[in-house]
Amino acid sequence: MDLASAKMIGAGLACVALVGAGIGIGNVFAALINALARNPAAQVTPFAFLGFALAEATGLFGLAIAFLILFVF
Amino acid sequence: MAIEIKPLEQFTIERLIPLHIGGLDVSYTNSALLMTIAVAVVTALIVLSSRAARLVPGRWQSVAEMTYEFVADMVETNAGHGGMQYFSFIFTLFMFILLGNVLGLIPYSFTFTSHIIVTFALAVVVFIGVTIIGIARHGWHFLTLFAPSGVPKVLLLLLVPIELLSYCIRPFTLSIRLFANMLAGHTMLAIFAGFAASLPLFGILPLGVDVLIYFLELLVAVLQAYVFAILTCLYLHDALHLH
Image 1 (tube, chains in turn red, green):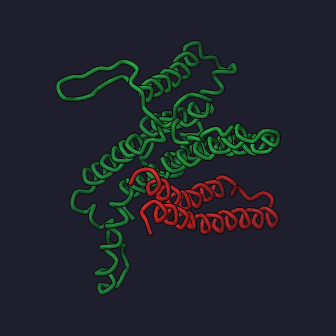
Image 2: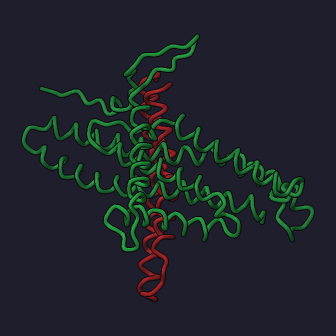
Image 3: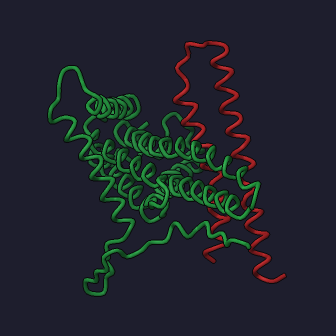
């Protein structure tokens, strides 16, 4: 296998990290809806968005690796 | 006719005023221009709106007061007792990153937070500053940060290296989080815009997706500035109060 195609496959594999981010973000908002449905007065929305940002970032680490593989090395 | 899509072209740094001192390249770049604009906008907002301050705030004064109160509230709840001493630093950091992210969303402008060296420099400043504050406040006692109390002695052998590693990795996660978010978002916008340009008739579909992504990016731009500031507060809390 030549280097160019190996790079493409590697970048594609690195994007699998986004599966985890998707599950994480889904969990965050599922829990938020759960909490607000049980107690509409709960002040949890800022924490949910903090959790969303942190969960999303983990997936983007993988995406950053994909960009590194494709364009830097 | 195929249009070549270059999603990473928007991140190129151009020298606006070439300048060389010794062997160093200190040219005034488009990145530096956007940083200057960000600082100017924040300064203008705060100075102009507080110059003719009234008891009942006008529009601009209430914008300035809202941002002030938002950050002050964040510092007070997250950095704990004694954290307000460092309020001005966190406010500056928050506004600088916020303006950097939001100004970058203007078409044909430049996002300086999409360069790892910028975010890494900011994160290292936070890391070194917080470590110095911790050592100055607690002396050798600062090292108990790495050894949680109430843990069996045998477990400490395993726990201390992990705590030490997670402490030292902070500037990297803090900087990569901001950088990767900005890079990925702007690249995605450019890719969908490229689809819209290259499809003859159904280009309206990717254009619609692009509009939705733009709203998401607006949310992410504000959120990442918030996350950067709040994590700085939490690190400060660790240094001020240990565990």
